[in-house]
Image (cartoon, rainbow, N blue to C red; front, side):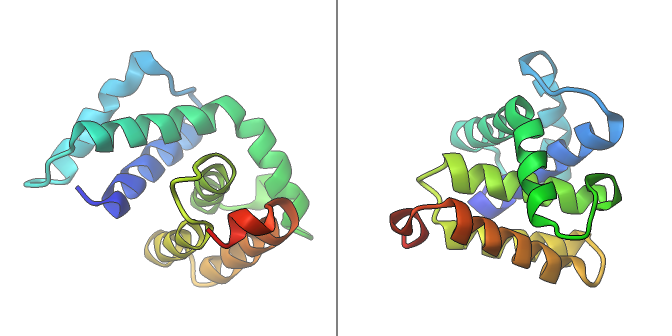
Length: 147
C-alpha cells in the first residue's frame, strides 16, 4: 500500500468516527480490517497499519486542539458549519504538519487538496488549501516549512 492509500484509509477512519461521534482507541482498531476489504489486492503492511493507527490515535488525542486551530484559521466560519469531511482532512493535515517530521509540509498540503478534490464539494479544495497554507506560514518554523 502506498503512503497515499494509507493516508486515505486514515482519513476514512477519522471521518467515520467524527460522523458516528465515537472515540477511536486501541480497542476498536479492528475497524481497520474493513478497509482491507476496501483495498482488494492491496496489502496493508505493518508499516501502513502503524502509520494509520498513529495518525488516527494522534488526532483523537488532540482533536480539540486541532479544532481550535482550524476554527481560528477558518475566518468567517464556525466549526459546526464546516463540512465533516473537510474538517477530517484538515485535522489529518495539521496533525501531520505539527507532529510528523518524516512527512514534508508540502506533501501534507498537496495530499489534502487531492483528498478534498476526491471527497468534498467544489470549493473545498481551495478553502482547505488556504487554511492549511495559513497554518503552515503562521505556526511552523522556516526549517519545517522547507523540509
